[in-house]
Image (tube, rainbow, N blue to C red):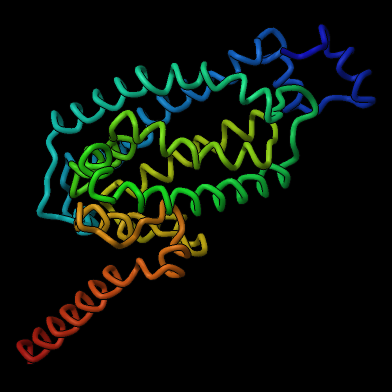
Length: 292
């Protein structure tokens, strides 16, 4: 909750006028407790999870041939009811696990110094903090993900997520409740080490959720803006990990690919890409001779 009762008080305290964004933030957050603001993360999680996968679901259901050619595993088709069942299961896990976890973790948020007041962070401050959050999460998630592929952890926990050998956008957070908590640690580690404003904290979890939905979408669209992000894995990269399943020792990275390349866990995927390229070249040559 902001320590100001009026905008004038806030301006006097800051020694300047408020920006438009700060004025809107004041009007929205002035009478809300920090706990309520912190729990917005659960609301955003449910909201963006409900909205972001819709385009991928529509493409899957319509099966329009011009878009279907971008499906990574075209032989696998999902019905509306299969997708709805996945959505229902994930929302139940959110309510049972994520909601209480948000409330329990609130004292930690206050302790590490996530702030809710004025002034708001600049665009550059938010950008570089998000870059740091992604880098920290990607490195720590890589090792935890590898541990989840140990025989015991896979059978008891991670196996649930791998029920989707051909993932869909809605299956991004589909997992055992224990995995939701375990993989929440890497996501929380960046804000804990480099704390910022709660708006940056919100944006971080929203972007991470959107990224996970895209990489689990099952579609590799060439016009996706994420293809311009250096070292970004993307849907085809992560889809291979699901395709191989339990025995997968490749593509553990959550966002970027550098950890897989550094530690050699990209070789299976690279070999498959080379084989597919040779097969595609051979098919193209055969078609050329057939035409002649």
